[in-house]
Length: 472
Image (cartoon, one colour):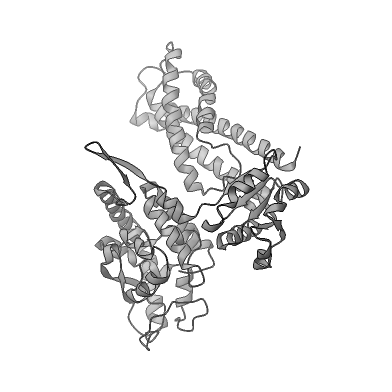
């Protein structure tokens, strides 16, 4: 048995055991909270003290229901590489469904009166226990892969920008669970296009190299012009036990979201619709107001300290106001803590900031590195100029340049701009990253918006603020 197979058996089994222990522990702890804590003062016990054994029996009887529910939501797969915030959303869903199903099982235990309040406590306690346990498992899985145990051998097919990014990411981040053995080029003469990668052959060599190098997974990153080779590759690998993963072109992915609408018996294909309907806009706005008020209150000491540092380390105003463009091309003044000298654009020509920029104030580079200069934009959110999550706003000068060279650039103005966005939390920030890639991620966010998606991006942003080495 291969080492990767052993890990794929060990990790799910350990997760099932720990999930079971977490659920059982939630039952026991909830029982004691309900009947042996100060909780009794709020909700007196009126029907006598029940025996613990009935709750343990019930826990053991319903644990399989929890495990089946978690399995149904694909939570026992390896190499999920998810952020704990993503996992938490799934945990809430699974816990809620499992509790409801467990309550249904009470029908078979009618001889014993179970406390409904205990089930509320079980729901809350199991959320805490399972979340901590799952966080531990995600860390353990990444640790195992970082020690190069259980890695799956992967080869990349393609030489475009996305193929290069995948190759570099898998080589650098072994915690993804993959070990890149090399890449195949579509055309043999293209092998020189990726001199820093391990070239292992062209398309015609794929079947033989899979067997020779024991490749377990092929990642295909093809340009639209190369899609004709997809069938040839699949056909040549018939009978070979290898997994294929196709990286979709972002534009194709977006335009494939076709909807069929019928009006008075006439069918229409809706190829472009409003990204947010009226209710979506209301929900997003309400969330922005309450979240920004909470954040401003929570970080008010930080705002005061940063204000003092900015004023004490350089001459000029505290805030830097800059005209930006947002929803439907509307202009507004975006606020930032000033991180550059007041003469940073004395020549009148706007330019992007860079890591080695000599225009920073003594504290400027630090607050930009950790995105602290962006904090005053929560006031822009309260005012309604911005949203917490959305495409980053840009100046009209750069918009006029990039709308001609970057495909679908103006699509980002279909929603309010944001303090943080899907592109930023995926590392696409700063002047060194591809603008087209940023727009592709922005459009993906617009086409797939949900409140849960916003919360996920906010949680990932908090992580990026402390662990990312780049700046906006």
